[in-house]
Amino acid sequence: MDRLIIKGGARLKGSVTISGSKNASLPICIAAVLAPGASTIANVPHLRDITTTSTLLQSLGATVERAGSSLRIDAASINTVEATYDLVKTMRASVLVLGPLLARFGRARVSLPGGCAIGARPIDQHLKGLKALGAEIRLEHGYVEALCKKWLKGARINFDLSTVGGTEHLMMAAALAKGETILENAAREPEIVDLAAYLNLMGAHVEGAGTDTIRIQGVEQLTPADYEVMPDRIEAGTFMIAAAITGGDVMIHNMKLEHLDALCFKLQDAGVEITSKDGVVRVQGPRRPRAVNIKTRPYPGFPTDMQAQFMALMCVADGASVISENIFENRFMHVSELQRFGADITIEGKSATVKGLRKLSGAPVMATDLRASASLVLAGLVAENITEISRIYHLDRGYELLESKLSGLGACIERVQGP
Ligand code: EPU
Image (tube, rainbow, N blue to C red; front, top):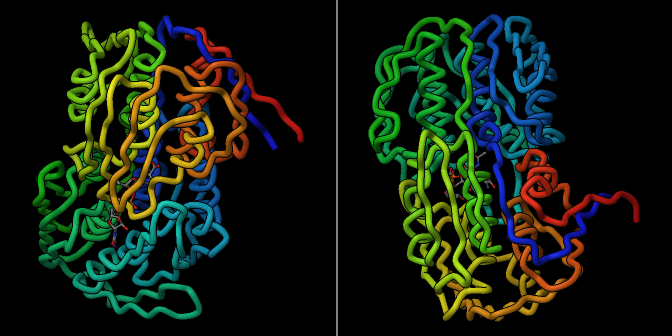
């Protein structure tokens, strides 16, 4: 199994280019199912989750071809409406195929995803929405079986909580429903805006994405379209923290700073300098960051997907910070691994108190989920001596070429294979 070996202490310097967004690519590639024909999706990162998505689409009968960073998805040949447990358990987002299949073919059978390392992550809001659109839903043998008459029917849906996947799922299904759907208390993440733009290029009528009320006028048929996915805001945020934690000076290309306002404010409070010129963002780390409190919230609040990485930064900050996780109930698994670096962290309920130390010391640690793994890499970059991170297949789900991008900035990091 691959491991990462990091020798800490290098100040990162130079330029890095951010890849396409994983969390925008996944629903966009799945939305291609809605139109019988070939769409080319550009700026799709090479990641394990994308490979799983391709396998999922191929298992339905679609043709998927990769050329560089583009995926050509031809959904004309779809001949099955079932997504099996094998696929859905490896990647929860596979469940998003339920609505598009149902909307286009009138039926679908998709495995329930089951539990997840960071929380229970039910899909009750997705199913409640599909029922409101007229689907008949049965849960049998671990699968969701959904049926509808010829068409789904537009409806007013009020989410009980802000759900990114739920909003994306209902937006896709409603695009082919008869009449108007209104999604209230919708999530506002940039990935939702990106998906809406792709749907609209396919001929959908989606308005209000990025606000908490989205209106969709259903159409009878969608046509394939070519689209370029937005840059990955979480990868960009992770590199901002990599610059900050090493006291580095990094130029970040192909990122949208406006997607990371909440993170930027907190980094600036911590003493990090962030400037932007001609679309390139420069991040200069302080000699030592100041302690800052954060609370994760749905967009535009502080992203839960940046919580673990920010915690790594706070481990070496001057002072104590309180980090509250409000989105997932079990997203502190990195804490016990960060403690192996000597970090002083205590957890009470939804909050972790981090007392910053001048130094961390390198250690063998284990990745537990995607963003937790990123926090271990960041800690390894500043820790004294050697850090060895195992189970890095989690990182390969979400960070394209992480070690070569970090090496390009001067980090001492390499991937080794074998026991
Ligand atoms: N929730 C419910 N019922 C539902 C749906 C969600 O209770 O029907 C709860 C979840 O359990 C969670 C909260 O609502 O506590 C928010 O979940 P949401 O649906 O917004 O999350 P998601 O769509 O499953 C996406 C990202 C996650 C990211 C979250 C929050 C993708 C593929 N995944 O998940 O990304 O953390 O939004 O921003 O877009 C990651 O990239 O590492 C990652 C986990």
